[in-house]
Length: 203
Length: 203
DNA sequence: AGCGTAATCTACCGCGCGGTAGATATAATC
DNA sequence: GATTATATCTACCGCGCGGTAGATTACGCT
Image (cartoon, rainbow over all chains, first blue to last red; front, side):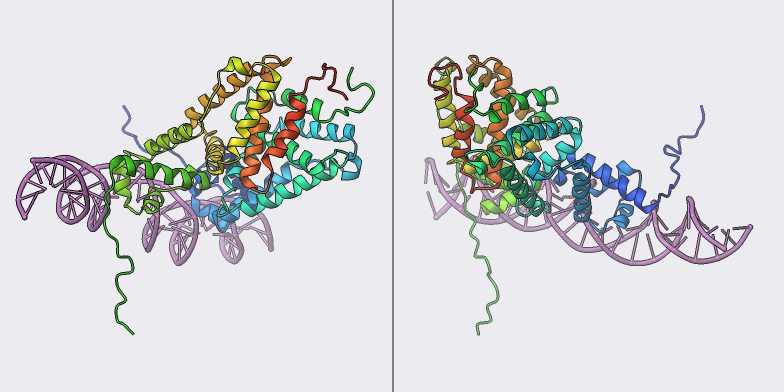
């Protein structure tokens, strides 16, 4: 029966290169925020995930809002592997393939999709620190879609439709991982990208 | 130059019947939560909106979580005007009309739609007090849709598709009121509810 | 091995949080 | 008008929040 009830955590102070630590903080913050939303995550939560103190987090990021900005930049960096020029997507087949490929890609990056879905809705509130970011991003995304869907009778309407479905599907999938996102996408896309005036469309 | 720099708020203590006050608290809480999410609203915010103290709010509701439950019950109460039996919706025309009518109805109740959209995503987190509520609600909604869409080749897939689009569209509309929700809905529904084997479908 | 930089730490600040306890005052009833 | 029930109030509690100040210590460099 040793009397040693002490030393529950033999912590050793470990020092990381600034860029390494910064990256770790951003990654852990993204993980926590994607799970519970920015409003539900504290400086201490992030510090604990990195096994440091909150003042050390603030040494690398001046404030929580700055850290959130870094998280958004991190998401952008991770979620844009390839972006072909819009001119190459200006017909139904190319557009369909592009969208499907992106859905396929996102289906393998659950956490990033969840981060986007959660923050986007939280940021509807104009006082949310990510409000402007998402307003701009949403606008430019729908603008791109409108350009891609120029062959549709009502491109703006179609762009809003596909964006609404896309985000709705991702949210559904984030809430329930058992949903086969690609199957639901194909169900939608088979109608959305069909050309009803074509010779074989009504077989 | 009157020296009276006092009495900025000539407050009079007003007493309301419990059911009236309870209702007021729930309505104001719903308004605030729909705007910023449950995580961003405090007891004090709600009390101020009712022009009482937070301890008075807690006199009517034992805790914030109980108040949230009341808010959810309030939403259910407001958002279910008529619900025809499923058997009457078992064909494309009836289903299409039912869905369209509900979208039309929701387009006139922005705040309730926003409340649902915001809480639903916040509650993806299992530790959120509304998590179980939305898990159940989402499941039963998709189950109902599956029954209504039994005439589709893949009813479950179709149910998830229409639910994803619906919620995505509502979220898009909540974030940007300039979106014509009904027009985007019709764009989607005209394909979703069309019967490609019909004689006039490909005119 | 010794030095200097700076990443990390401890300690603290003011504030607002959800919630509790008990005093006060409003309004219905007799 | 006096009595009573209770809605509302004031005051307080412990805690965790984001953020600051300054001491400490790990590590690269010579």
